Image (cartoon, rainbow, N blue to C red; front, side):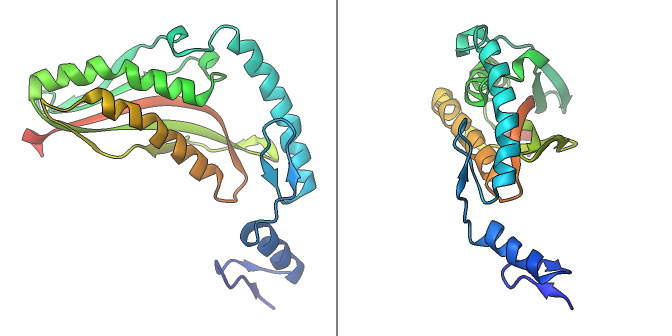
Length: 212
């Protein structure tokens, strides 16, 4: 007999699996909390597996924080990945070295966003007006098993921002890190058990109005 969830239509071969699914996914009874990051889990076993991984990650991050603990400690190589129609369309990228994988995501995204400012200003001088979005390529792992990861990395995008000669680019660049961090939290919050491991790459996609 097929056991079907009334809320999401997922099916299960056993009724007890359906009951556990409803409890874990739809009732959101997360009674077990990680003592390191305070993330909550519906199953004690998942919490214990996550917490062991969290302890290892925290120790690694503490080592890295001695070197990279502020935005000013980070530096980037910005690469033109592709360009078309005389530069009207351009994709710029920052590929992170492995020792940046342990940097706090908020610090890393904020620093990367600020680092792209001169690239945007140069494009504005050449093309007068354009639209752009910033994209992060994020590697997530399962909270219960860090060997399971998202391959390829998940792409999370900011909103599309419009730039004119009178635009205050700094204002846009202040909002984008919050947009991207919110996207990470949303992805982790779907109930699938994914948690962020590291950010692989940071892209800026630009399209000038004259080419649209």
